[in-house]
Image 1 (cartoon, protein in one colour):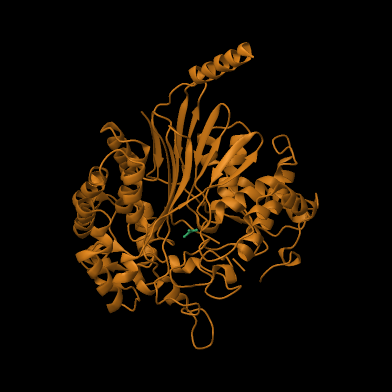
Image 2 (cartoon, rainbow, N blue to C red; image 1 turned 120 degrees about the vertical axis):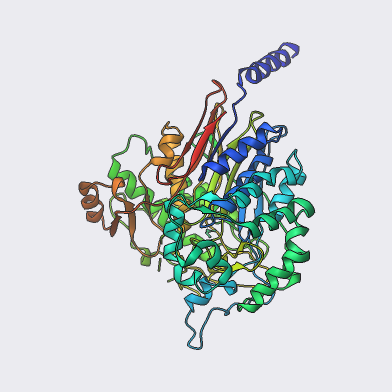
Length: 553
Ligand code: GLY
């Protein structure tokens, strides 16, 4: 007995001894954000303080993707006690929101109202998330972690092709609002590459948060300006909406795949549940050694089924009961698998469900590991590129258009072509269903942290990256991998050109898939990897983004 205990102790200590402490690594969509995170680590902050610095800096330099007028999910792993938690800073519908608020007199969805200007905007959660993380998980005061972002807003950042493209695309909406015009169309024209975008008002708003915490945003002068600007431009925000905003801690979705544990986004994200369903379905097959076309067929069929469930069952957990246990259970996946023909696509219309669908280059993701092994996978958003196009006068705050992530009408596709039903209908205080899927994978020897923007395609991009990781590949490969996607409706398999060659397209069409190959790409994935045994730490930023930076220090 004594010998057994001693042996166990020796084995346990040799395991601990065998773990090599990691170097710190950060991969994000903008070099200034990655550098901000490392600056905060160098000041004695941990991964969670760094996550605030990266998020806040992205909110300044990558406004087409995220911002303090938007929301986020931060998935945290605390090394000292192994706690995994998702900080839910998702936007909420204002108290005056109602189910039919975007329907016109003919009962049709008014897409302009649902997407542009302050009526399209949920109550932002990002700042409340910052305060919560700093208070409960960080080591530095919030004011320290916000300094790099304040500097970037005050001193400006260089305009780059991706943001210029979004400004040009949203020009007509931006022109409606003077404060938006002043930032994005200085002198009446979009900035040129290398021009400095300076945001003095945003710097002042961030300083108010540095001084007063979340009250500097949700109450006081900034809140008054936000509500007034909303009112003057057709919005329905009130001071109470802002004051009542609550960040939530959510228990992440966990699932097993090929001997490793995945910890991933919980509702109000649909991501974790869909990822679990897809991997459970695929778990019966050896995908690594499978013919490439057959692999795409089976993965697409699994995606189709998980997205059908998304559209029917999922919504804000504070408002709807969801059969999460069923949807993530291997037995349920077995049933779904049984409906997959090995070489015939199942038309989506034959799956019981609701009645179309995608694109998306909005949103942003970053991944962090610090030298203690704390991990952060965070996906942040303002919804579509440059969101509602509306900046509130005197605040620098770009309002999200996250209300479009609700189902404005059952079966009616949103900006991502996603459909929904009752579970995701609009209600006051409710969070719109998201696809953001920050994910951490724990193996005996290694750890992977990954995520991406990309609207409805986020989930399938993360699945493809995970499958690549399980094939033994490293972050460089996950983030650059050619992508394909199926989301149930429309009944179509989308693919980047590099994902499917002509023969594969023909073979998939012969199986009954309608295949649409794009000449454009999607996503902007950032991942980090730690091999606990060798101490190897790797980080990679998607080559599709032009400003990303992955740095191990
Ligand atoms: N706004 C994109 C998402 O949350 O899925």
